[in-house]
Length: 249
Image (tube, rainbow, N blue to C red; front, top):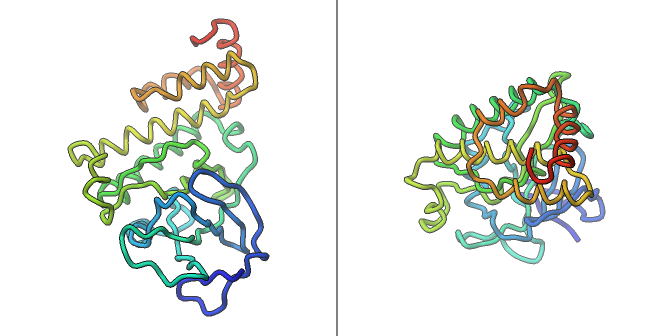
């Protein structure tokens, strides 16, 4: 199968793609220096993609990674309506670090999320773009200037100016700054929960319970990490406490 890329003469052959992973919104493949995502959920539309790539700079130091080019369904013409599902898109490839978050110091972790928070205000909130997906798997550790940086990917479910009035109703009082701060705190906490995962029932039960929280704040997370020098130490000590006290740290 041939995949036609927006503005590109030569098609991409499906068999040239290297499978990476898949989730609720689609499958990710590697293709040279880019990621190609073929969508299945229908949350990403051509209009939303154009909003995201217009407002978010596609630069190495920007922690929110925007989509680049539309991948056209080889069996159909380019969709033009806001209800159209997007067949796929390209995205810049990150030099990811295995277990990179566990290896971070707590100061590095807090600094990275502070950077994400500031860039979210500048490129998302100011432009009426709302974070909706709090899946911690969408935060990737990658190398930037010989250090570990955290990047947010898979923006398929985000609210953008091109979304319907009904979709925008998810942003309470149309306050994108408050909405995004809250979502980022949830993501920040869920990423930490991901680091303490184990197959033991006490751990799984605790994580399932904590993932339902909606009241977590940046300040609370900072206090939580204060006694620890690195994320791995936090994870190890948290598992010990959960096993000792059941569902309560």
